[in-house]
Length: 70
Image (cartoon, rainbow, N blue to C red; front, side, top):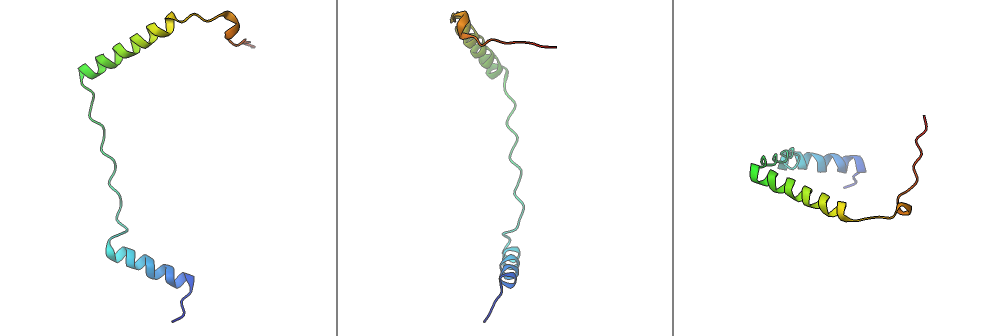
């Protein structure tokens, strides 16, 4: 039996539809809302990281030169 690519595509597509392979995916579940304890722990972690970054002293030459033009 001689088959063209178009005919083969139709056969494969119809077989997929009949077998149920062309069903839509379910959307991903929404993440659970964060509890107050989790939010407070995240805020404490951010504060600690900010404190550690503030303790590091960099020489002025390390910072890039910036120019603001109007």
